[in-house]
Length: 81
Image (cartoon, rainbow, N blue to C red; front, side):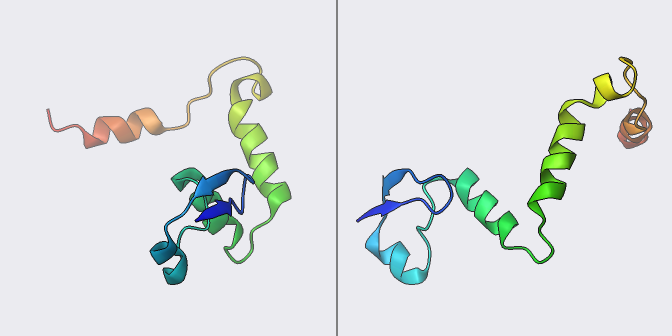
C-alpha cells in the first residue's frame, strides 16, 4: 500500500498488516525516530535547533580551540588495561 511519510513526505510502500498495527507511518527508521522525538512531552523545536547549532559550532564558539569536556577522563576510567 502506497503511503506518504508523516515526517519527510516521501512516498513509500507500507505493508497493510503493519498499518493495521499502527506501524508503517514513516518511510525509514530515522523518520520514525524524529516522529517519536516530536511526540515527547515538552518537545520544543526552537530549543532543539539551538542545541544542534551549539553542537555543530562548538569549537568556533569557544575561541577556535578544542575545549576539554571531561570525556578523556571517562575514557581513561573505563579502560581495563
